[in-house]
Length: 526
Image (cartoon, rainbow, N blue to C red; front, side, top):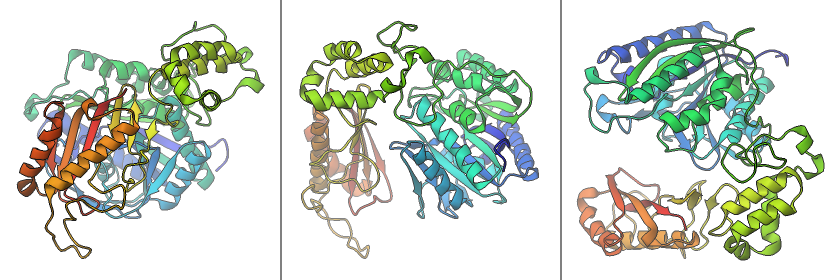
């Protein structure tokens, strides 16, 4: 493939909901979405694509980015919300070589990336729906990439550029698929299929404007407007609305596309659309970047976030920097600058005087880094300096059983990973395991396991400079609800009755280790 040849044949934007796959005949709009999926399937089959790359917003990752490389993942999936629609058995064909190359390309651009390759790894609803409808016979191998919950613009842009790197390195032609709704507010009560509609007039108005941009091929304009879209019609469950960022970086950051909206309909209140973008010679043309266009990920600069300084002032943190403000010798990663300050003066002192130090840092460090570093330091007015991506590892807690941290701080909240009862000292299970190494059931004490679970949560919270009284939400998983709920509930009440955190308790088939209970909490950050 020549350097001038575009590795992306066309891009698709499709909804993640299972209705077009499982119930297209129950609602006219769902049927129209299904027909649009079928048309896109035909176009893919007639194309010369070597691979389908799926970026799914319903596969959330927390630490970095993941790529599915199990050669033939096979399972039966049931959607979390719409389980009553039925099961979705699947068997897909992954391009292992490309998935590994995509991971390598992402790492080469500064991202944390890893592959996933084991039987039974849960593939998300959006990916299952998209590949089942767009590639039902597995004629073309696929690659599925996760969407990082906390990833912002620069991280997502770099992830898209890494996809182009891998495609060009392997000389492959691709159809890319972004799986996402438009507006994503859904009804919280059951709605009969014939009564389905967009959640609000505001959501409908914004959806129509987004569709107008897509129809005009204005992908880069949508990319630049992503923060506005997220603030207006997206439930704030992730950091940002990212699909247009990834699509633009993967396909090309411009507006030179032929756009076609094949279908648009409500899906339990959210906006679902099937859209195709094909690279073209003409169309609306290039636009000026309002946000950074980054090649290597060194952390988000957040240049459009609110903060100190005039937008056009040298070193200001609110606006893009022109070339006159970028002396090469001073253009260091702001995160590294702040790390140096913490190393030199001590994290405790700096944490306590964060606001004052922010102003001092801005004045003391020359050039644009001073303004940005000052803003970063000012935001760290409480708590200790954590590692760069906000992940927290508690030294005195049981080790994680996978590639994830004990906790992650995001704004004023702490998200604690699922915690079991294992002892941090010797990895034993208080109350005993639920089965032996051969899988034979054993007697165990659910009260002891629950007590140990809560103690491990307390240890992790202390590492975050919080405690149990800061917990606002608890999700508990029990492998035997009928047997264990009473004992678990008794111990839970001993610790949380006065705290009054919200709670959900779920019955599940199994946990990764032979334990009966696991708890996941959200807490207020100090």
